[in-house]
Length: 342
Image 1 (cartoon, rainbow, N blue to C red):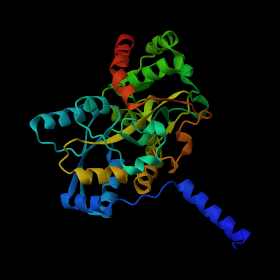
Image 2 (tube, rainbow, N blue to C red):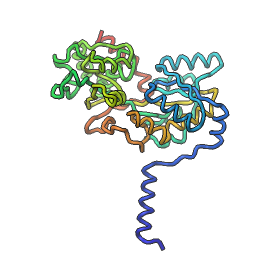
Image 3 (cartoon, rainbow, N blue to C red):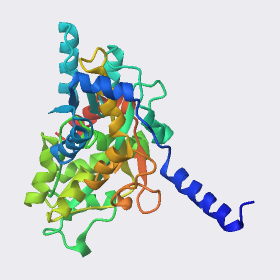
Image 4 (cartoon, rainbow, N blue to C red):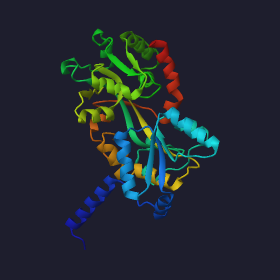
């Protein structure tokens, strides 16, 4: 008969396993077939900060080369569509926030999810089985700490309407969830049409500078070109600050919360390597690489490096947008930007 100490130890061990989530053994046949294919081509919105360590870890683990091509969502959709029409699909895996609807409509992504997707919260997985989240994208305001004293930091969105901030703010003018269009969507979701448009009309008087290339927004903030950026990815701010850049994100409420997802391209040249790579992205090892580079992991049991960067409803409240919601609405929100912020 087991004594109480033995039972307690077994219960504790079971609790640890439950907290860690299920342990997956990748199908050896898939690994072997992927190795025979020898490489995988990924079209990604991720920057080298995380794309390179992900590729390096996958290559070291399986001996399969990762060809990573960075592009925006519009360019990614165009390339995959062109390749499909030409009858020679080169892309194996795609990631981003707004590729889903157009590629799904053209039947160009596969109805397949990695087993590791079961580590994700329900809302991070396509109920139809075409995509799964790989990291959470939280768009926040940020300041240059050299230019903005702590006692002068704005505390909420309403503070940006004061005269002190006129002509001192920037955002991306690209049609992006981390840009002006995404901010319009956030205000509409939070306040409704009438109140949101009234706020945006006041904000339009503040002479916000529109930066056409989204990644340049943070670069200009770091360089001291502007004291405040209205919408930037929180993981990029955290990473830059860890390297000594004078930047800090601000916990306003609400902030926009969305996903970067991944999918397998239909008729991929390297289908097994593609599935193995997608499985790796959501494994504990893959998700830990996101975490270690300040990205917010999609997995429910890999904690973000800075847990405060994920909306908790207390310090910071988020409004969550699914990939189809962003795809269907960003262009509509951009019309409001054009109308009010010309």
